[in-house]
Amino acid sequence: MRVIVPLLLFASWAATAAAHDLWLQPQRFWAPVRTSVPVAILVGHGADRAPWGVAADRVVMLKDVGPTGTSDLMSGLKGRVAAEIPGLSFGAPGVHIIAMQSIHSASELPAVRFNNYLQEEGLTPALAIRSRARATNAAGREIYSRRAKALVQVGPPGSPQPHVTRPIGLTLEIVPERNPYAPGPSNALPVRVFYEGRLLPGALVKLTNLDADAKPVAMRRTDAAGRAVFTPPRTGSWLLNVVWTKPIKGDRRGDFDTTFSSLTWGFPRAAVR
Image (cartoon, rainbow, N blue to C red; front, side, top):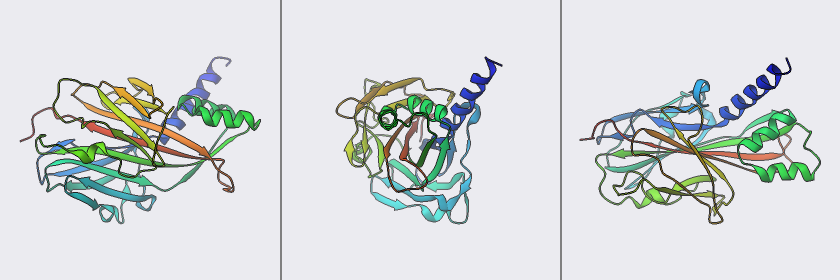
C-alpha cells in the first residue's frame, strides 16, 4: 500500500489535469475547396482522450477566421452536444482558423493534487501566491475556461496568409510566427503566447504528437518576449497547448481564474488536389 496509494493519487491527479486540456481536431487538416470537414472537440490525452460531449450552450464563441474574413459558426452547434462541429465547407482557398471559446467551469482539488497540477502546468506564479498566503495546504479552487484554434489548409498552399501569424483576440492565445503550412527549408516553428492582449513570458508551452498523445514530445517556456521555438516535422498532426492563471477575489467558486488554450495543425498523407 505504501507504493500503490501514491501511484493511484498521481494517476488520479494526472487524469484530472489532462481532462482540462481541450483541442479541435478536424477529420482532415488539408481539404479541397468546398469539401465537408467535420471537426471533433476533444479533451484529455492518451487513454483518457474523449469527445468533449457537453451541452452546446457551454460554447460562447465559434468562428472561422479565413483569408477573406471572419464567419460565425455558432449556428452549426445549435441544439447539439458539443462533441463535434458538423461538416464545415470552405469556399475560399487558403488557411482557415477555426476558433472556439467555452464558458467558465469550476474545479476544486485537494491541496497536494492542486499543487502538483500547478507545478506540472508551469503555473509557478500561482504556487508563489499560495505560499505567500500560507495556503499551500488548502484545497485548490479555480474557475477555468478554454480556447482552441485549428489551422485548416483549404486547397494547395501557396499565397501568403498573414492572418495566421496575427492574434485573433483570444484571452490566451498561441500565435505562430510563420504559417506552418508555408513551404521552406526549415521545420523551425517559433510561436508567441498572448495573455489578455499582451505577450506572456514564463508560460510553459507543450508540443504533442496527436498520433501518440499520451505525453508531450517537447516543452518550452516562453522567453521575456513571450516566444518559444519548436521543430515539429512536416508530417502527422500536432498540438501546442498552454495554461495560465490569475488570482481573483469575490468569486465564491474559486480563488484563481485559469485559461487553457491550444493550437492544432497537421499534414495530409497524400497531396490535396
